[in-house]
Amino acid sequence: MNFKLISCEVFKQELIHCIDKTSNNIDTEFIAKGIHDLNSEGMQSRIVKSIQKADQKGFDAILLGYGLCNTWIYGLAAKKTPLIIPRSHDCIGVLLGSKQKYLDYYFENPGTYFQSVGWMENTENEPSIKKRSLQKLYGMDMSQEEIKSEYGEENLDYLNDALDQTKHYSNMAFIDTGMDSDSHFQNHAKSKAEKNKWTFDVLKGNINLLQNLVNGHWSDSEFLIINPGAVVQQSIDEDLVTVTKPKS
Amino acid sequence: MDYLENLHDAVLKGNPTIAVEITERALKEKIDPHILINEYMIRAMDEVGARFERFEYFIPQLLMSAKAMKGAMALIRPLLISEGEEDTSIYAITGTVKGDVHDIGKNLLGALLEGGGFRVVDLGTNVSPEQFIEAVKTHKAKLVCMSALLTTTMPGMKTTIDAFKDAGIRDEVIMLVGGAPVTHHFAKDIGADGYKDNASAGVVLAKELLGIGQK
Image (tube, rainbow over all chains, first blue to last red):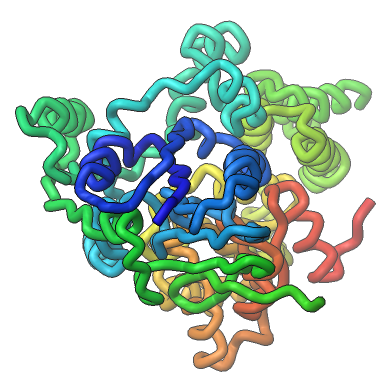
């Protein structure tokens, strides 16, 4: 089978490993993780741009290395080629191999900051994304010097605290998918946790979901299959997603 | 009393020091605290919200305006209580749903609700349905605002609304939802009264649904 794989670069190491083990032909394109910092429309339009190109080339399916990632997926429509996407809230569920495993861990440990090799390799956004990011739009990308000069040193602590998205975090979990043989990234994550005075956990990752994606083993429970003419919609069941045929 | 317009400007421009100074002076001169709130600060915060919604104000600017109003309110509020007045405030309960510890958006909403004249009881983050229900009963609140940043936690909004139904008090409150993964479609389907994608519009919607007059 010939597949186009369009994926967030966060899965790059894992997917290279999986592609190596599959008998399918995979034409791969990785997209910057930073597009998550755009609004949903911006993220969707970037991914759709790649989907539209691939749609003209007669692949058997277009595989998407993404999760719900907030709301980017809603409204996504398949034209000529089926779209296949793992059923997962985001990359954490994909790297753990199951959304339930993710939910179980998350609700036992609210305030967990997850890390993986792909997360740690891709921390810096391209200037073109930064410029259009939500952080920029809302003024949340200011440096300490900029805050001081704009709002006064006496308000620095107040604003830093109010703008700190991770102030209620208390735990860091490194997802080990076997891509970090010398524990370089794990050790780095651990030191970040220590610096923040967070507890630190290592979770055993599972790349079966990504392997099944490239192998073409798409069970309904693990994958959302969007056939030509169908549109992705939000739902209120635990998956938060459904595929609906448009009325013709 | 011309100087009172400076209170409006201090809140609008986010200058806590000046806001507090003017409030101190006004209270010394026995100016009715309600005038300070209703004619100057709420008007300023309405404008802050409108500018934020038009992307003319950044979040830090909104936070500075909130700090200015909070500083002034800290002086005013004890007087309102000591006057022995009946508490006619409309209470709003805010909180981030169970499992979720993100609170920037929820806090912005809280600041603008206060700026809009609501008495805000913030339950913080990781709030269970039971805590929301208890707070509504304790404060006889008319408004519940729930937030979630993650798709993993947003089903907690439905759980909370269902818990209000089970407790038989769903119809006594307006329940609004917000947060990055939430949409109109989701809000409607889980039985919320409304959703907005920004804090300022959320306050306008809350007032509209509660029948509180807009300027």
